[in-house]
Image (cartoon, rainbow, N blue to C red):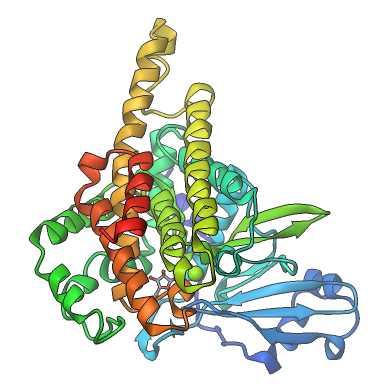
Length: 439
Ligand code: SR1
Ligand code: MG
């Protein structure tokens, strides 16, 4: 194809980053007029714009989120801001994160399906209109309230395995995977947030770090003076920077999972993939497990008899991981259509055992690294800029400090001892020991 033809073909390509010249940030008052421009949304809400109610519900760190209700239906509207909501205009952030979030939602829907339905995407307004998950709350808040959503671990295991496998070189031909990688490689500003907030800032005196001070001051100083800890985290950062294995969600904490019900059944959806890019597969399961461990360690501050709920959450960690593994195994056997570990070299030659051995060693390596990422994600929520409600909701400061200290002991074990722990079962046993003995 000539250059001119390529240019013509690319114009209007949905993968192109939009032109944001006409972007206008919304507020509660301007939402109805904006929606009036999208006939399919008007039809969904029913009635007249003056009959629509709008409320802002975003509790994330980056964006505004509106719930709009009309006489016949409702929807959720998410708009990116040109800055980080948590910090303000002094921290600019590109609107293009909405483009990557939309692109990731489309791919996650195709690969797995447990995401909100998208009703409309307005690229130049950095605006995504989607299903209002009105009966849902975040899994984080459900865990803080000690609710038990028995299907969440299973849905999340499938989500992790299917989105990672089906966007990787195990499923896609190399040229297609590279084109996907090229698209998401432009999400650099969001990657940089993770590179800094997870892998760098907690380990030196960065002005945006926050921790329970002065009680944890000595612990923080100890971590910064721990060369093994820092070196192990930098190994993980190198992996995050360089290993473009699959389209990862990039921010798969328990606040990015919505739990509720639909049609009388429990329903679980994954939201907010604006940090999506091609990165190391173990990062997503590591993030989810980290946030479940954080909840386990926060439990003594969240009510009486913490052991009962801790047992349940630890069981969910195991169920989620086992489900992700068995789903991945199954995909390896049935959907390995990509250029990596090609069937031509294994099954087609009658080397079925060799294909299974390759899969086992692939997943063994991933499990060990997942533990490391989980540890790094725990540290950042206790020592870095963005904390978590699990610890923030603890009323007694003394109890909170004790919970955070134990969580940091666990994080160090995951990061520094991941090579000797080797697997999640050993990590869970370690968690029980730390909960019992403090070390
Ligand atoms: C400045 S953004 C802080 C955090 O919020 C998001 O949820 C990500 O986890 C990010 O690191
Ligand atoms: Mg988010």
